[in-house]
Amino acid sequence: MPPLHKLVRPRLPAAAVGIESDVASVVQLDRVRGSFVIRRAASLNLSAGLIKASFDEPNLADHAELVRVLADLTTSAGMLRQRKFSASLPEATTRSAIVTIEGAPASRRESEEMFEWKIERSFGLPITELRISREQMTPDAQKQARYLVNAVRREVLAEYESLFHSLRWHVGLILPRHTGEEQWLRNGKSGDGLLLTAHQEGFTAVLMRGQKPLAVRTVFCDADEREDELHRLLLFYRDRVGASPATSVDRLLIIGERVDKKRIAEIVREAFGDLKNLSPADVGLTVPSNNLDFDAIAAPAGLARLAW
Image 1: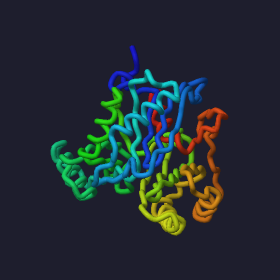
Image 2: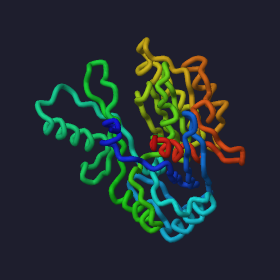
Image 3: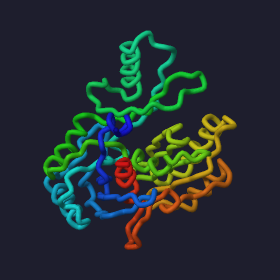
Image 4: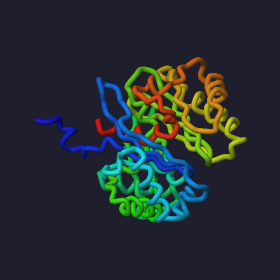
């Protein structure tokens, strides 16, 4: 008989699509001897303005053109017959927050009511207008329950679901870009891992401990403000989250095009000391040597990794 988690968790596809404001990527993975190997993949730059990533406003400027582009993308990857995908959306399309439930609610209903109130406070919208995912995190120092919540407006999500439907894709799992990328730090090693992912609207930082996120923060800023904002955020992590002796950031994964990764690593080392700057091989992914860019495929590849 299969393990219980195999019975209660749906089987996810080993293929995923990643959509950004300026690029779209598809990936199909295999697992070989405990490592992940890219079976098929392709990336394609998108025309400016084709996707206008936003939490509040419509995202897709030309539905028909996007259908054509994604069909061409899967054809170039040899995945035209693939129908089941997971999907990562642009960071600016989604919002993430850590929700803490104070005290001990008297019932499950009271707990849910408190959770819904916290959601409205965090995102400024009633839960009925949002599609959310939540993951229970390690309790805080006061033993209070904490959840990592990802949210997207239902009307915005409907645009992407209509796009996938036009392609005859069955897309069950839809998450923010950083959630796919952080999968490469969920390896259970001692010490904490830090993901820094740069995007057109700013950057997202995720601090991982074992298999769980410890802190998540997205900063929206101009490119010339990124270094200063990152420095301030890292000092906050070090002084608040990193105050515990059990915290030791020893691994760094930097993702993002048009960003000076060497300079970013220097800023992180100024805050946390020496640490290992991870490559795809370090996180267990074999990338073919045909100029495939890990930055472009890290998010969908991370979601495809969830098939195992």
